[in-house]
Image (tube, rainbow, N blue to C red; front, side, top):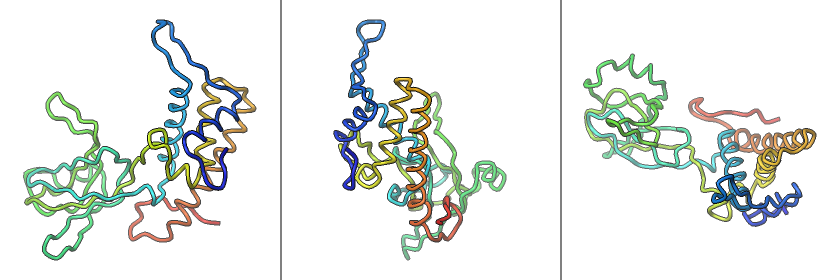
Length: 239
């Protein structure tokens, strides 16, 4: 059961089954060939809970950086596969090591400020662009667009929030080790929804999940974030 030392995936599954008082038996679909085992059901619940949690707040622990390259005459930069949202993007001076941070704008600003893509220079602004399209191929990765279009090859440093590896795959996770309550109640929400639990139970679990999420949010978006150079992050007041 969840406790001071957190939970691993095996303990989380056991806790969910105990709370819901349901073993989530294997489901056989109408074709009689496709099944969904108990563990597969629980894996779906956990992944859905993790996705909601990671998109609800921005804890510093879920941030990383990567070094890439702005290619000359190419205004697009492909984001890493685990990219969730940007924190900062900088051009690195290879001689001095100085980082010049680009200002985060929207695509309309980039198009308006730099209407001629062939006009090049040192990038100053960037925006979330969406999946890249190359002919009939649409990539899954999100890309960034910069302005002006790079006139040279520049080294780039991207700091971003990312999706951590799921506890389903790793067996343990930072969230399970340090804030298991929000993971447990988030997973219970999914489980109770799946079995179509009574309304009063759904309300109770929803309340517990929101309370746990609020505590986690106060830590990640409040106590762990005292000041930022630019207002690019959510800042949750600490009471």
